[in-house]
Image 1 (cartoon, helix red, strand yellow):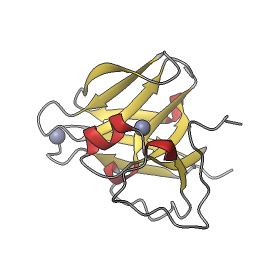
Image 2 (cartoon, rainbow, N blue to C red):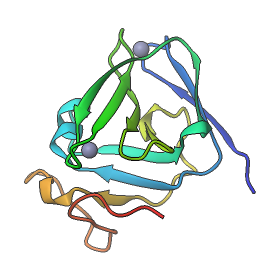
Image 3 (tube, helix red, strand yellow):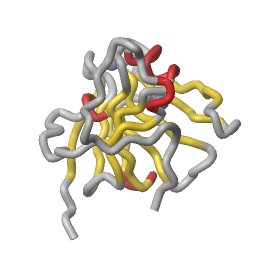
Length: 140
Ligand SMILES: [Zn+2]
Ligand SMILES: [Zn+2]
């Protein structure tokens, strides 16, 4: 079992995070919320067991958004520079996500799936051979 520790944080440096081990899954989330929050076509997120994500410096702000499941996703971000960092879904309390670009070195993530492709922007391209899910795929 690999025990890689990956460090990361927000753009201004007030919040630092660490994730332990390999992600359960890595996805580009094309949902409308992720587009709005990241200012991009999709949010690149990696899912980990919730205990493998630690905030090592500072205290992120958070607010709940309502996902398609009807349950809340709590989005954590830097209150100073607004970098999105962590997502915690009420629907899956054992799992949390981090934004992949918040890692200092994310080169160990080499494969990424695409979720909520039903909502994908008309101006983005999803590779033809990529793993695609119109909504949230079942985990595990
Ligand atoms: Zn910051
Ligand atoms: Zn999303």
